[in-house]
Length: 248
Image (cartoon, rainbow, N blue to C red):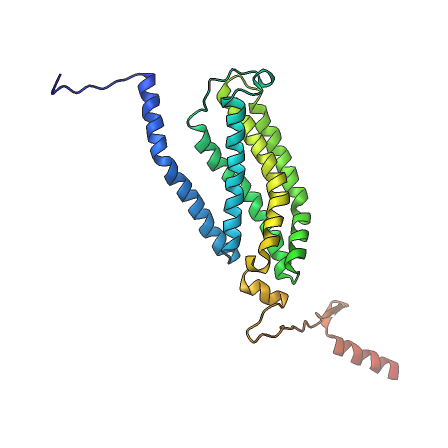
């Protein structure tokens, strides 16, 4: 009847309002997380290529997790193995929750790997040698962290609620893919393709590939003082004392 307002209550109406509110905020969450990560990486590594590559690889990891969830839980594959009955959909809050969590975890050891590569680059190694050495030095830590996270998330796949199974399987496989294929193969390959452009001008100057006047810079590192009997003596002082003793 005209002039009468009404509202619908109950679990169904509440779920509908929750889904509508979530859908209206998803793009803002994605934009905020990706934009903030890009700005922080730009400020840290003084480069535009590294943040772009990092965000692209993280989005790829999240996309792989989403695809796996659709394949298993929405399409109904592995129902008997995992012990669930597919209902043709995914829990509404799970994709956004997984995006934030996966992005944070993967970016954590992603920055760790890039830091090792950057240290070698600033130490004078070539771009290719810095990538190889940085990946090799950080491989043990990254692999150990990935194994722990995969083991922890896999426990959720053994629980009875299908929401927990989705979360556990999605997170475990996403971390496994991210730590092996993405960080072990795609990241070094991407950095190798970008080459010296990935690093700041300061890092290239340290390596000697660029200077203000087009010449290769050089540095002279003086030998640190030697400590003898508790006293700090330079090489010249030590040689003079040695020659004086020989004269006597």
